[in-house]
Length: 326
Image (tube, rainbow, N blue to C red; front, side, top):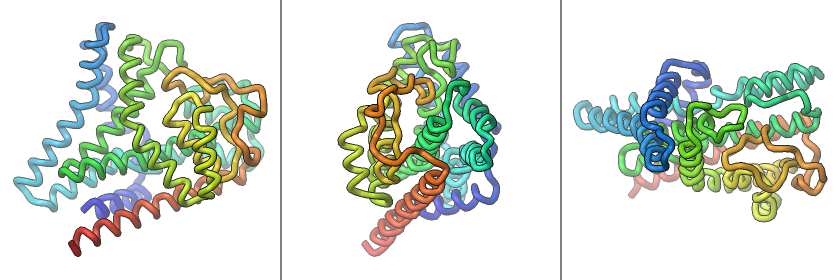
């Protein structure tokens, strides 16, 4: 059922893409804001309670519905519920329109529009971004978006599906990731001013733990479908050059797999700080080895991501066959 649910969701999302702003994701965002407003009192214990309610509340609700449908109506309705949850949680089209629009602008030489689109996507100041840094940032954000919208969701879905709660795993990962993006420390251009420093710290710490295994699975998949030796070498030698440890593993592996120079930034930044908000490095030694980012690398990254999808589906198919034969 795992393979059928994921394949159906990916096909459905290609035909009828879900809008980035939709009632379900808006409801989850409003729920998190209400929890923070009523529970976050600035102390660590209140911060953990707020995070738990904001993330585990929707997760448990999805799990209860899934269990109820499985027991009362059997697997067909449970499968439909799983597909519905995955349709909201998983998919390329929730971020790919940003990538496509920026790529199209760069291909026709409209750098100003590309900067504006990147600024709108990541809430960064685009005025000082040079062409090379612009392409680098687009590549980095696109790889991370593919991880957070597709591969991380798939992994947590599969992990919890082992105990029959796959849809809850997808919601758990996406909600935790959304809060890590929204509940940052004050001073970040996209931070939520209503969130205390304690809650921001708790959110980033929890996200670092939740994304630890998915980040390394994505990095390994990047190595398998790309240049394996270069990806592993970049992962081993350069992952710590990025501000976020998990993101660094993914981006270093992606840089090696594609052969593109990424990561022109200091070795350390605030936990959870967006790539676009980290001051750019001034020395060539700050960047990973490889070719300078160009429009040609966009197609390479897209091909890499689709090969990763094929790899995931192949692994799931083999596991399904082994389960049936066993």
